[in-house]
Length: 179
Length: 314
Image (tube, rainbow over all chains, first blue to last red):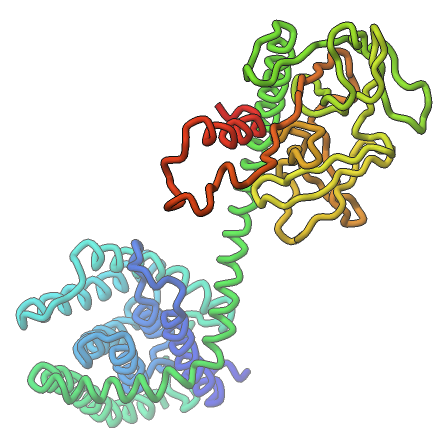
């Protein structure tokens, strides 16, 4: 099958960019111009993490870094820091994905949650050290919680629309490498 | 067999790691650069946003419009609810208004029956309606007071609330009241907030039309119609009714008097307004300055006249 063909690989990479663009786009829509009460989940982060844990090659680091940097620029965050931290977390998750393959979903979710918490915590710590003003703690906490809660949703979405599953034993990629 | 991909991974692994490290370094360098030279990076950010976001515009506009549509729909729903509430309240208000109107009428009738004298200048004789005209083309009633009670032709007749008509034909013990609805009835009126003059012309309907209004634009439905006192038949200021517009756009009077139940009528005694025949007596031309301190007896006369014209002025 063309399950692991080159075309699918590039299609999924394009889809990642497209989905990220859609998420950024939705954030940009002026739904609520008054200060919102509810923090929004960081869907970009969770999308990257979910795909990294399932199929790391769909989220190449360059692509992810560009997307996150772009989001940093668009959303008015300090550029580069959040992107760099999440890139590190993404690669750590990728390295761990092989071990998580046989684990139940909860373990996968927990590791993703740990990564999210680590990214946001490190981000806040660095910003605090450099005396840069940042979101209120409660907002950040709510954002973290929502982001973690969004992980299964993103996984379900990816499964339903893109058939994104964990690689089964013996699957090879387009270059014939074992996954 | 299995070693081949492993070896290729061995080759690609360090390269990937190098790229990754460079990427992270680059990103952090951007951050540090931002921290050091914020304005320049912010300019770059603005340039990126300026480049990207307007190109989203074609998509942002319809999505925003849709979102606003949904929001509007929600607010319309709220408006609907509010409307329902207002309707309910209006219903209650209507019943209250009805109660108030009934109380007002009852009060007027009771005052009438008790012969309460509202204005000492306008005394009246109350009579009971004996009969109507008996003809569909003539709108008049017969009451049980006549010349014996001092009734004089032309006096105004009203029920407790509004003008009903005028005395037209006095017998010894009875007199005929020509109603406002009679085709031969003409009553000069004033329409109150605007002060427009007009003539109520009876046309055998319950809501006689108003003719000869000078400026119809100033008259609105609901305005009060009172007698103007022109022609010296009626005292001025007697309530007749309220302006209403019929289907043809013609101004008509919704009569305040209860024509359905004409039982007691009161005939206003009206000995005519005193006329100022000779202006010289009042203005006193050539008699020094036009004195504000005119002789007392001469000044009272017009004041009296005015007072007599306005019902309920005191």
